[in-house]
Image (cartoon, rainbow over all chains, first blue to last red; front, side):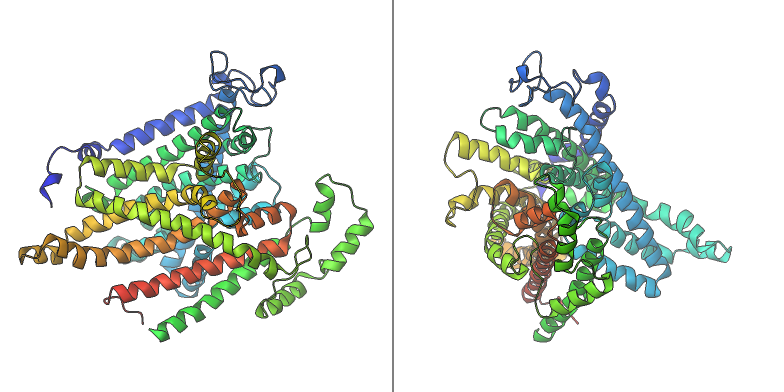
Length: 287
Length: 311
């Protein structure tokens, strides 16, 4: 290794104390708390309290983040927007993970025609960009939270599936799996109690990073007017409103964007931090 | 090599057919039809008889399996049907939109490569320095920033405030219109490329053949040129290929933001209006493009790295 690594560098300190894990975790926790306690933290109702007398006010004492063209408090709307983003981000990624693990694990464990079928399915899914597929699904469903969960939850499981399959293949031949077979455990029981706990690490990393992707995708779909419909606040749809006001009231677009950025950043840092801990091989590579 | 190329092209056909089947199935469960959505968007109610006549005209009353059979037969003749909205063949619609999208994607990938590659490379050669920290912070930020927000901010700064660049549109096809959307779209692949390059180069720096080359007195420049670049390039190229998929997906949003007349904005408009033949066509073209790019990159990797054998 080159000698410059030996010194106390920022990156070395960061990785030594798992700084990304801590920064990401704390930031994410704060955003979750902001969403959960939005009714107590918000100054006004995000939808009902529109007052045209206050429209387009810059950030100030009364309105911390300013107001939008309809006089609604942007600070309150950003807080409530966290609920949409987090619900869609966490929820859709849960669906993706369950589908991906179920298909990948069973394909790796059973092999045969099921494995071939799942492989073909995964190859096909990998060829369709997930945002494009989600967009197509949103064409069928009416805009709303449930539709977003379905569209984003069904389109991004292929990577998890591949990963679970590969890990299952390497775990399957281990002694304890063979022992469980000899003991007469059912296939499902072996998969759930013997294999799953041993392949979970990398899956958790992918799921965390995927949550950030889902938050971005939700914002993009809502921005296109195909996600959460106004007036209910979602960061993406707030930005879409802000586009027309860009010249007169730039702050309308600053804060929802910052909120998305902070959320995705926290999840990416958290995922990187988890990778450093759960996947020691990558740690030696990164430092 | 030629054999491999032919086999790869043949392998694409089942994937394309499967995608065609998938999107057909997805769209045949659609509850409303184009005719009913024309009436539903508030621009005027359509009479039930008119809806019935439109469905008849578009063949939407036939059973699903008849429609799919017809669809595959048409597909074989490169006939993607007619747009519900403009009544023009979908192939024509797509052809007129292809060039702007290709230019946008090329521009964004160029930006990603020109910035991301040197950033990751330098970071790996000088690990632990300020440059390394800065480039990795840039990378993680670039992966986290919403592209359309970045586009919006750049629009505000460079177009509306400073007036350096046009804020949106295609113009007459000049480069000035291409700059802002390309950067907005290219930031994420740039970030990922910087990270991947850094990791790949660090890996190779610790490899046995680099130590051997150094210990036999090879100059540092030759080590970098002969061993590092060639080996890292394969990993980097593969990353670029996989990024194409994400970039095409994100292009949909960026095109809409910048009113870019490409396939992405065509797809968003068609999704909103439920112009299903056009949506299907857009997806097929996007998937085909992604598959072709990745095939070309695989071939390129085999040329660069003779250890890769494809049998």
